[in-house]
Image (cartoon, rainbow, N blue to C red; front, side, top):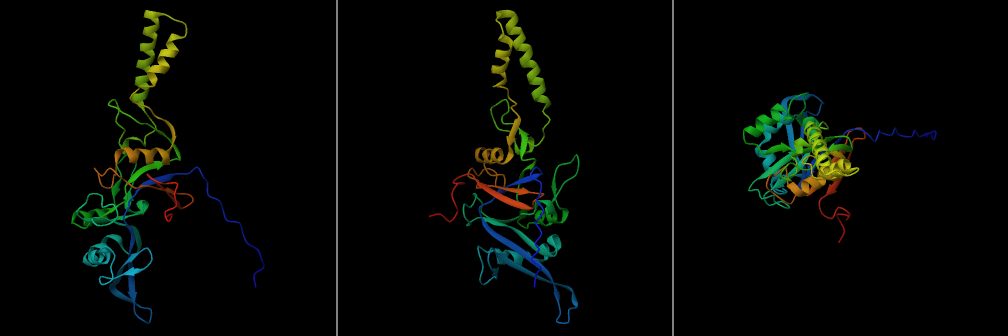
Length: 273
């Protein structure tokens, strides 16, 4: 019998890093790779079990879902080599699945970006070497695109001098030397206008108006909403050129929690009829 004591769980800090990835509209899937043991509990040498699963059941080549089990079986050796033991969740998507994304093939995109994307100070993020190797050799596998990594509210900017939105890779850096230079030019221009035309407080009025049309426009914004809007305007990163992406997944690192938001009908429950 329990003594009735129940400890209150620790609460993770809210203001910790979040990772925003593209939510892909396919079918949830996983590759399960396990070592095989004999009945006595001894590990058999170099014997592996590789299974495919959907959201709610294991799949077989005979009882498949959009050909995922068949793909896993065909690429069995490569998947063991690159992924290793574990349950590897991801999205099976592309031709013939949900919105298709204009593709003539199917792909498997892993969810665990922390595991499969290598980060090094001063270098661009890159795929894990073994994963990159099998991808280069023709296995249709990747990781869901990382659209943002940082605080909930980040200094994010919108447009370049052509009125186009920045690329995702350009919205991460809170340091904007181009903005500082442009602001100096605006102030100089405002001062010159006052010299020529006069007018009390004219410099600040002109400066405020000119700042509105600066090509660089970073300011603190709620990152999930900004990135969702960015995705809506720019289209899918997973399938470049496809203009109707589904949405985003927000992963809170300290809480080990995920949240989703969709470009359309985000306020509606998925099962609503």
